[in-house]
Length: 270
Image (cartoon, rainbow, N blue to C red; front, side, top):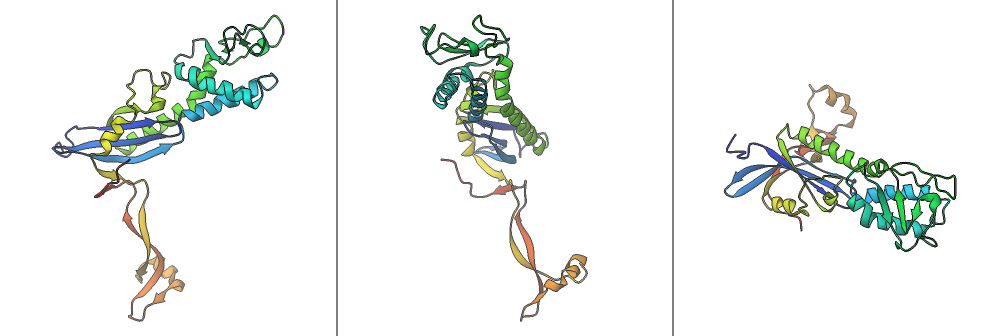
């Protein structure tokens, strides 16, 4: 067993990108030359950073719908600034958060609306609700915890998928590498190295076997077994060839079972 798996454990790569989170699990099967095998079916979930932006936009549309900033163009601009600043820098649900989208010189005028928390060209995402002197309407009441909640569905989906991979590998996975653009988020994971997919690219060129996500097979005619109750129950579908064999249609012949290693030629990622 030690020769089959010199590392004695498997590892998982979670490639967090803009649209998807791609998860693959491997074990090292040889070192001279380096050879690795998938030890669990790979997973791909729609939980990338773009969905954080989508949830932020939905919040802004609701919060600013009665403001002059509730127009589609304004929402587009503020959401884009959220992507470029707040989303990339957010790391602590207790810190005060802003979305800067105007000029700091805009004390009044086009980038000022105290009723929704817009001052000096930035939208304040408050940690508590306050009231402006001009209006009894509270300033924008999106707390830092609410900012964290924009990330939570993606984080929860990632954790669920990773746990599923660990279970499918029968506990072999001991290490998890978080890579990709979305992995740069301090909130998603504050103590990792952003490898931009380099680990996954390297591993892909040394994988000798992959785990199938689905069962593959073909439809065929099965020879009748008169002792099989299921065959007897389907006797009305029986067909007999001129050469003599009596066959039943609609049978399925498995070529590659689900969650089984596939050896041979492996298509490499470009």
